[in-house]
Image 1 (cartoon, rainbow, N blue to C red):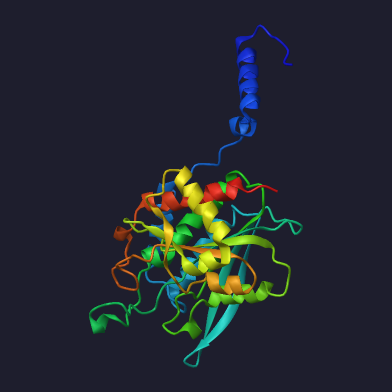
Image 2 (image 1 turned 45 degrees about the vertical axis):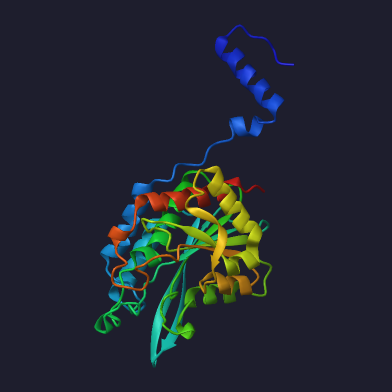
Length: 311
């Protein structure tokens, strides 16, 4: 029973509460909506990374980008750390860095891992002209797009903390190939640092090449094998938000990516990637091939999935 009050505002409040209770929607009526995903801000972050130029491991632009991303995350997260490691290639030792930002850390509660790679390919081996294949790519989509989405999600998490802990990891050395021995370096190192422990994560979501203008994302086969229920969450949320024309609900590719070392370490992880990208590993992977709308589509879906998780 609700008390009767002559105030129209009070009567309206109790009427709404009664309606919600009667329909089982009380949580939905009064639940706080997630912060808005700012697509313009995300696109600015994508552009800023590209302003440094190609960012392969060992370059000046690589060092500058690391400093930039760290400085942007520092005021947003509860903690930001630089996980440094080295890698030897062709007799040279390279210094690499994973950037780890934590929101709502709780050692007693498993959280969600969100990740992307921030380095770019040192060689454009998919170029038609042989003389261009040794040049580094700008990586607007392949690298900068996933990072841009996560950086904007970090701002949202700062504004309103999700109910469970979230860790954002920006992996280094994903694209240091061409051989597999020189790829996925950051995810391999991060996975080795937690292997053997009880996993601090319920699951992981990897974002890679999610900013191209003609965005189409299919379920990836290895992700489906390791975490079909995670894909179900993501594709279900995409449909709920009206993005099912972008998130195609069927498996298309089997892709080697940063999710594989995490899966091997016992973390169910899925790869959200548009592999139908004509400019992959070419010099044409530039800012004009990407769009704020694509970043928003992915950011809103992943953000809503995170905010829907409860203790």
